[in-house]
Length: 166
Ligand code: HEC
Image 1 (cartoon, helix red, strand yellow):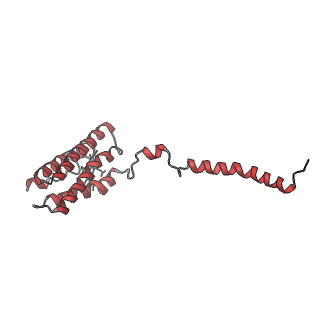
Image 2 (tube, helix red, strand yellow; image 1 turned 180 degrees about the vertical axis):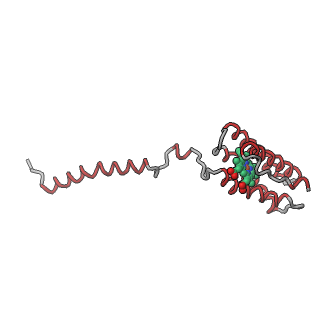
Image 3 (spheres, rainbow, N blue to C red; image 1 turned 45 degrees about the vertical axis):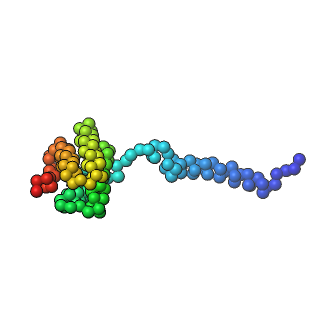
């Protein structure tokens, strides 16, 4: 019988020693999330968890842009596009707010859902480009925004409804 050479013995030893290490490294890489798992793909997660910063970054600027657009007497094509975009953004903000209850999750969810629904009406009416129903639906949505401010932020801010009264 042929005897294994000292060289091939060394190769076998190196293989036995490195294989488990390679297995551990690849298992760790999968665990550390480099490969997305079903739970990381389907779950929603708040990027900004502070409600104050969320309002400052998303709802406030969209609200201010809508006030500026809807205060005009005649809206051109680009202005209608801007109205449509910000209506969609504020309607979707209702969904995003569901991820960030600060207290009383049930009441929070009711307020967030109301804004999503009145925001959807605003968005749908903006597609038809008729100013009066759009202004009325904007006003109705602001009523729902403020209902949450009443309940969760001592009534602050009370969003001015300049459009219908001027
Ligand atoms: C589910 C509850 C909720 C809804 C719905 C909601 N907000 Fe707010 N909003 C808050 C809370 C709470 C604050 C106070 C955050 C703070 O300063 O701590 C706030 C603050 C604000 C502020 C003041 C931000 C600042 O600069 O201090 C604005 C503007 C605002 N919201 C706009 C809106 C608009 C527009 C809508 C509707 C499209 C809306 N919010 C809907 C909870 C809500």
